[in-house]
Length: 171
Image (cartoon, rainbow, N blue to C red; front, side, top):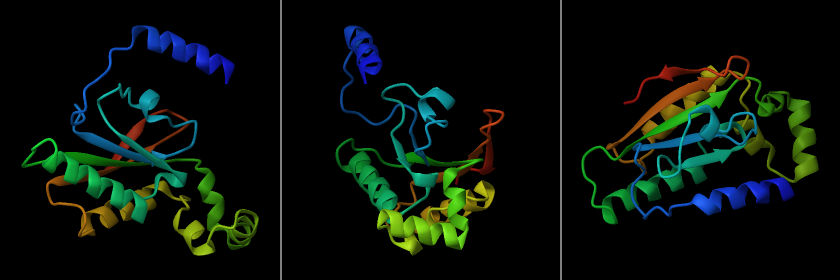
């Protein structure tokens, strides 16, 4: 952790604290926790621009839906926003390690080794990011917890090229 703490010292030296406020990009990113796809680097997100929710595969889980519903509540209740609140960009990526979970034997072994539920592991797999990002966008759009004032888009990050392509336009 030493080198990272030194970098933090550099950051803290020039840090100008930001007030609690809505994200300036009016965007929330849901993406994978893979260290190769850090959205701050890949999308150039700066402090204060966009919250990022990360999990294995970048999948839209009940916890993600709950977080987004809470952020929408905050946008209305604390910041007094009305009309369009923000866009949720769901970003899956190629070569995702959760793709191994598509294999039933691997998934069973992973469930035994981790104590995680096999069905939950199956739900987190991203073997075809184009298909899973479409499914997750649809899951968000159909959730009764996500207000209509929240738009949702879907994207795939190609780890070979570094490019992100839009699969589902914001709506």
